[in-house]
Image (cartoon, rainbow over all chains, first blue to last red; front, side, top):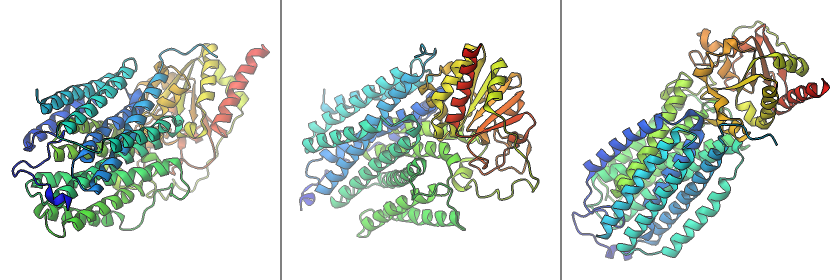
Length: 120
Length: 474
């Protein structure tokens, strides 16, 4: 079996492909999470209430950052075929969100005008 | 510079751009810059990841390109939906996001399991994996169901579905999922581990359905926000699994956005998270305030037009009914005609009006009503006693005075728009049935209230015609 041939150096768990350093620094990861959450809360609290719908479609697009993980899984060499397939479906899903999320956000934002247009 | 350093630098810039993107959403003037910044951040993220993958010997590039192309081909039409369909598009998008996270988590687990990679399956990683698939798959089915409800797909029940012991069932299933999760953390390489993992996946999928079926339309803004948050948190969990700080940051930004929106929505309904998720709105209030028969007073569109014409301040309160009837463009006509006559027109926007946060603002902006006339509840309430006319278009619970006075009402304590304080109230209503929450609205029985029954679009159109007609007649 192909997957049996694939061995990893002990102590260096996660394959490094685009992911990060071999060794998982989970305390560091938790710190990043904590800080990012505080930044997120503070930034989002200042978002105009007028724009809550576009905000949600924008964050839809941003959460499609999962594409990074999907890419790492899909491109892995010597991975079993079904792993690659799962990754490819995940790329598809994320790309759908990236494209539709950013496009519809911009489409909505274009509509917010301070002054009325000249009547048609 | 090593490839790894380059990747991390690209991720660093990408993270900063994501934060700026949300920061620029604080003002409609800078918001579009926020979108460009977000796009740039995403491109850098993908470029960085590809660079990293190439440096470590990746494959399947044509397949990957194909997946990107297919995603773009589906995403483009999804961005062109009419704005009244934005809530279901958003829910569908959460479903895609959840599925992506769930699939990557599944792939990672089976990859490590297949490799018998004991070093990779640490306690921390397995906890993160279980969280990722739980949140991911729950968001997937929950959001699909929410999208179906919003789209009013015929075989999906619109009204909340409740049964005895519902919360107990959910709790029991959650207990089972938790137990499987703990077992996996303790023995990730056991022969039964794939089955336990599959069990967690199935339970998560079931959860999504079970959590959403008891939720009614009025609670959709909160639920969509919560699902938004879950989609972000599943990306965070993926970041923990892959040791990827960009995933953690972007996911956390998304998660906190959903969290803040849910809190705002809950406050606007005076309810707690717990109550929204487990309270099944719409089932408790079987009695509707005694047996006394109350009568509506209807009025003609002509006299309503006359009253509005004489007014100096008209406050329009839009609700979901306006969206359903697609009346926003007719509302714009009415707005223009009243403005032309020197009447000040403002829109009173309740945070939970519609089916998602900010729904009314987007619809009115689409009709090209300047956003400076869209006023939040707290600000407009001070002006309502001076308003000559409050025109309610397809809104119900958000103007129900029972929320202020009637302690037995299920919406008691919910902040409302004080439409009842205006000198005259006109309410456009499709039928004589009570609103979504199934509660009678005292506002409609006040002496100063007149009902205009009919479809919001045709009634507003009629009003506009009367106003325009008068103009040419003089």
